[in-house]
Amino acid sequence: MNSLFPSEKINFDLPNAIIEYYPNFFDAEKSKTLFEKLLNEIPWQQDDIKVFGKIHPQPRLTALFGNEGKSYAYSNIVMQPHQWNPLLMFIKNEIEEVVQENFTTVLLNLYRNGKDSNGWHADNEKELGRNPIIASVSFGSERSFHLQHNTIADAKLKITLEHGSLLVMKGETQHFWKHQIPKTAKTIDPRINLTFRIIK
Image (cartoon, rainbow, N blue to C red; front, top):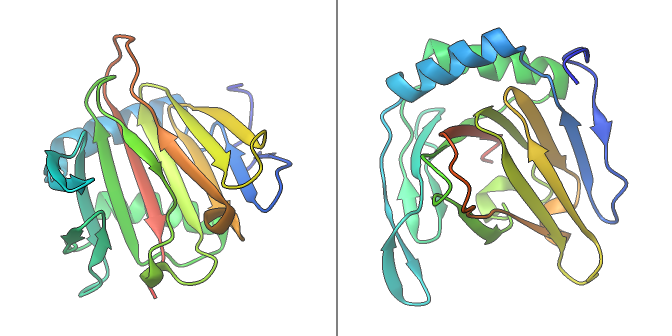
């Protein structure tokens, strides 16, 4: 797949969704550099989340960067953003050239190993607006990304998110679909994922 140009994308034919995948958005060398910088320069934190009334440490590390004052809330966590830094501005600008949007915020996730995960959810928080656009770039180990339609049982998709890839979800996707990064028993190295979004 490495012969693809960064702008070459795969469109998935799914009901009530617009999902685009750029397998080789950043080349291997650039991806390696960005991964190492993100791993070492981002102030990673582990928040507690409330699931079915019980408090658990979140099964991954996170960080939030964005425009001043635009906090982001999910799963009973309210995150205050750090100021944009040059590393994240570089990645943001590269994505915005292709996606043609101005993102206000990025939520970063560090999956340290196969035990780290992100359960079924939709990015449908009210501050994201009616039909949010989410641009998700991945670095490091490949992980399986699962999508499932809320009402059509056989409408589902699995995508292997590759090192340096970009996944864009837009249109009605968050109304009709949920997604997850499941745990895996395989021994795998860390993965970093940056999800760019627009907080209204």
